[in-house]
Image (cartoon, rainbow over all chains, first blue to last red; front, side, top):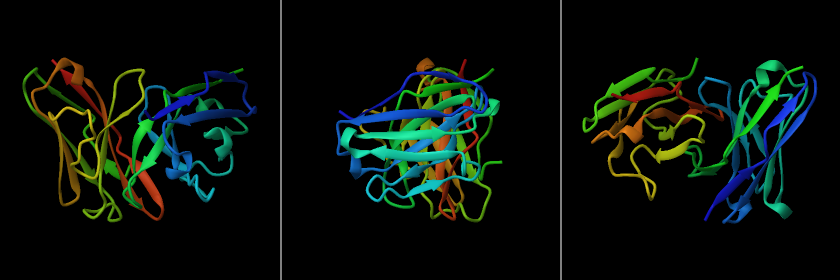
Length: 121
Length: 110
């Protein structure tokens, strides 16, 4: 069965960096893109973008360019979200989600359990 | 501000039916673009409930159905159960290689 297992919660100081991992199993990793979704405390879901795990081409949503980088390692079927120069308002739960469907009618059929990143001094 | 507008909250009683709307506010998010719906219980990851406007993934109760008319997609839950109390989000393509979630709707089963 398809599973996405994310890395554990992390506490970082402002200005630091964080790398969240999302290990996929139960399917061929390169068959589906991987998306990242942010949810700040008490807020809604915010699409951050996605990465094509075939070509390596990332697409970043508005507001998630510059400090946010998507990557992956096919040898371990794992996608990564790297956030640099962390700010307090980056405090959120970050989800990875498997991309399904045909462009542009994508949808997310499986989700990771979420990783809480807290930015505080 | 999301290009997809949802009511902030809806409520219903057990056994009733409710409908959550998702209206495109931009001309880029039109009737052509297919909508999916996600359920999120507090502290849990979202779960796909409806994709491509009206298709239901395996394992999702047939009490959940999706439809669309013009620029408005709808999620209907029939025979409401207490376990349906959750937040619901719609999602669609917004044009210019960007995709967007609706603002979310809190469903209360009273």
